[in-house]
Length: 319
Image (cartoon, rainbow, N blue to C red; front, side, top):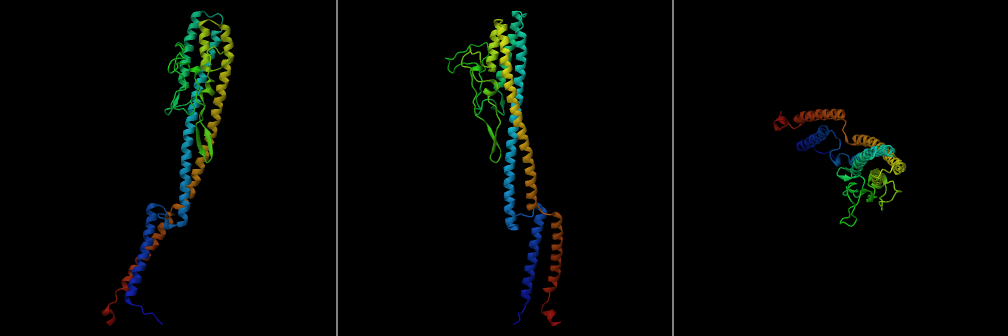
């Protein structure tokens, strides 16, 4: 049985086709204006899942990159600080060699003693160094100074509340500050004060410790009594502590190298993720423009042909 086609059916079909054509044009215009071929999930349901996955990985990679930057800054600051402590120890050793010379008069020894006192104060400043408002050498106790600011001239009062102790009586916190630099991979970025400056001394008469502050204190007392022999023996302990500082600085340097390797790997990963995300999301502008012009031509043609289709009237049929 043949189907009777009416003028109304022709008009409806024309409007439907013109509307579909305009919808395709609108989609292409959205792609052209945004530069993306996926502007809503219905544009590519499969592609949107890959896009979201890549975006999540990029966000994670960005966070790891921020952690790497923070860790690297912390390590570099620690390296610089230990280097400054090493310079003080080198100057301290020079003074010990000079003070152990038996030809020095007491006035010369007193002058050396004054400089040793200043080195002691400066070493405390280094021990209480802060980075971004946090203590560098006090482990996880970043809000508390690890070393007492008492000078060598001030008297110790362990019965005071709180006890007034010297820096060589203080112990730093031993906790490690770790940064997650990759999935499942963490790295400690701090060195504790005990590792750099030596373990605390329980007794002021302890002569076996190579605690930096204790060495400076003992040298100060020896210079006051012109104990050249004691100063000569002290040089060996100073060398031991200097070697320990160099070892810790080398450890920091090794960590810096590792973090830099991780940083480069994260940069490469970011480039790869951005590339694959772009392949899924970004529109081919040349293709979009070509398709848009083709749809515009179809639209114009449909309007022109449609004008001819819907024109017939009763007068046209009577001609």
